[in-house]
Image 1 (cartoon, rainbow, N blue to C red):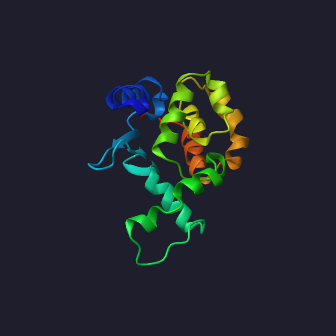
Image 2: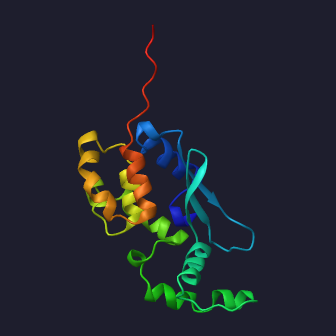
Image 3: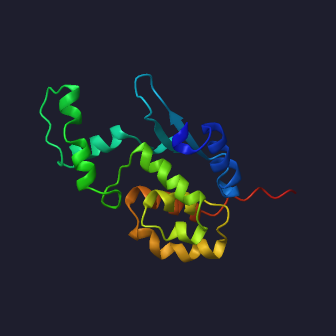
Length: 176
């Protein structure tokens, strides 16, 4: 799986065990699906407490274009009609202007996150990089608190992850 620079199981361990903040371990899960006939395309997703929160694939971006009215589609449509103008729309609407992203954009963001300091990832114009960063174990309580005012400036989907990280960890019951 060259897109993610190694095996998915190794990358998943890196994200869920090595880099995820301790309070979210076991709650946040990353998934990767590849269907027969999809060539080298994948579907990546992020799950929290057993619920899918975000999906990254060509399909989700194309559906976004259709629902936003960027792509005019008539029903019934064939597969050619469904994908018509997709790459032109990708050029017209860069990553920073959308709320849905491809599997390649997920992989590029993961690569950027892995290869730069955490503060650069937090300040990245790429919202996927910021998602990885806000869930990172290297962020302490003070840094998390400093992020609070920025939460409302994030895309709606990303606000979820900021709020999740700002939750107070559950207290274990006191022993009698």
